[in-house]
Length: 148
Length: 384
Image (cartoon, rainbow over all chains, first blue to last red; front, side, top):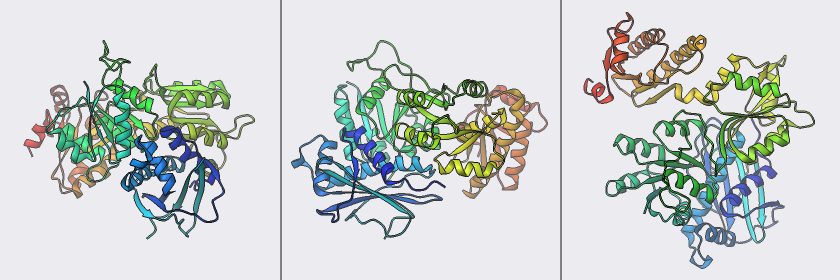
C-alpha cells in the first residue's frame, strides 16, 4: 500500500490543476502560524477499500481571486456560491490526481463545503500550504472518511 | 451555428467551457446534472454533448446509457477527473466520441470539440470528416497532429530488445512506444498521453521510483509498472516496488503468459464480459488461437459472479449477447453449456442473442441446440 503523498507531491498536484486550468502555479511554503481570514474547505471523500479524504481550503481573498479567474469575471462580481463552486471543482480535480498517485480504484465522491480549515487530528495525514504571490491554498489528505 | 450542451454540476466548469466554445462560434446550452440534460434534450437537439462523470441527481455514465437507450446518438465527449478504467471503458462501449481528463488546457478542449464537430480551424465545417480520437477498439489509440499523441503502452528500458520483446507480445491493436533512457522517457511523455508506463527498475544511474514520480506529474492518469529481473522472492520484490510508487511488476524474461495477464489486468478486463442489468455481452477474442482456451476459461470464471448479481436483482432470465463473438466457435458451445448450468443453479434461464448465422451454427452443437435464441434485444425481452 502506497503511503499518502508527501507535502512536495501534494503541492505539485494542486499546482498542476491550477497551472493547467488557470495558468497559476503554486509553491509550497511553511504554513502561517495563524491562519488569518475566513477559511472554507472543500472536503472530497474517496470511498472504497482504502477510504481517503482530500481537503482543499482557501481563505476569502484567495477564493475571490481564484473564482474570478475561473469564471473570467471581475472580483467584484464573485459571490459565495461562485467561491464554493470553484473550490469544489479545484478539490475534485486535485482529488483525481491524488487518487491516481495512490493507485486507488474507487470512484471520487461528491465534494462538500465546510467552514474553517482544520486538518483532521487522526493519522496518517499529510498537508501542505501553497502560495502563488498573494494567493494561498491549504491542501491535506487523510486516511478514513470525512470527519464529523 | 453548432449547438453544444455542457453537462456539469460545476458552474465554473460550465463557464470555462462556454467561454472557450465562443471561439468556435458555438451556441451553448447548460445542464447541472444528467437528469436536467435529458429533460432539456426532450425539447432541443444539439450537435455535441460535453458530459461530466460525477454529478449529483444523475451521473454522466447513467445519463449516457439512458440517452443511448432512447436511440439518441448525439456525439458525446466525456470530461472527467476519473481515470478509473472501467468508467472510460464503459463510456467507450456506450459510444463516446472522445474524453478529456480534468484538469484540461483550454486549447485541448477546443481542439477536441472542433474534432468532434468536424469543424475546420476557423470553426466552420471541415470538408472531410476527421478521425475520432477514440478508436472503436477499446484500448486502441490514435495520433492527433494538433494535440498529444495517445498511446497505450510506453516502455522505458535501456535494453532496446525489451521494447521489441514487449511489442512482439502485445496484440496489434495496442499501441506502444519504446525509449532507452530516462531522459528520452520524460521527453516522450511530454509529447504523449500514455495509459500504462513500464519502467526498467534498474535503469543505469537512475532511481526508477523517482523517475516514476517525475513522470506521474506529466502523466497523472497513467499506470506505472516496473520491469525487473525475476526475483527469488517475487512477493517481497513487488511490495518493494509498490513502496516506490509502482502498481505492479512485469518480470523478465517477459513471457507471453505474463503479457497476456498484463493485458487482461490493464486493458481487457472490463470488456471481457460487460453486464448491463441482465444482459451479459461477451467480447470478441482477438488473441492467438493457441491462447483461446485460456481466454475462454477466464471468461467462464467471470460468469459466476455476474450470474449471481443478476439473480440477486430478481431477474428471471439472463441474456447472453454474442454479437461480438466472431471466432473460436468450437469453444463457444462448451462455454455456453457451462454458463447454462451455472445459471440454472441460481434459478436463471439463459437466452442467447446473436445473428442468424451464429444461431444456425450453435444449433448444430449438442450443448447449445436446445437453448433459446433471439436476433435482437427487443425480441429477447418480448420472449420474457
